[in-house]
Amino acid sequence: MSDFTIYHNPRCSKSRLTLEILRKNKIEPKIVLYLENPPNQKELATLLKKLDMTPREILRKTEKDYKINDLSDKSIPDLDLINIMLRFPKLIERPIVVKDQKAIIGRPPENVLNLI
Image (cartoon, rainbow, N blue to C red; front, side, top):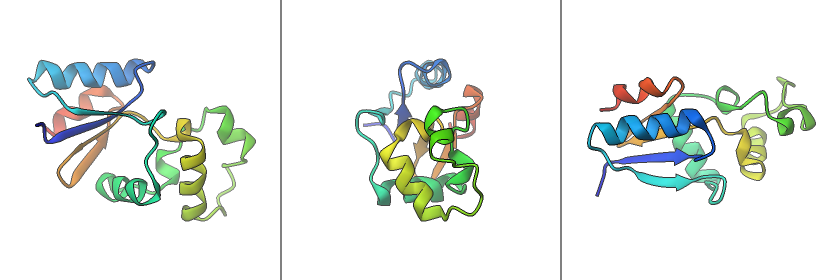
């Protein structure tokens, strides 16, 4: 079993390229289709810790749900942002690749090489 997990959206070119880089390096990660199986609050908080990022830093600002929920409002607390991302997982930047206690966002996809 692989030490790697990818939070993957197969419709996203960056996510597909990141997965391809892993596979070219003979790594078959556990694939989490996070739009179908979104993380729970605890899992998302753990991902953020492994990424060493805040909820705001992993928000996809170009998504319709970002605008609808007025997420540009900097006064929204982190816990509220996490709960909004759980309701609208498209807002979570992708792909996220995890190995042990470290994670990266595969943008650009070559970022994954820092985990290998």
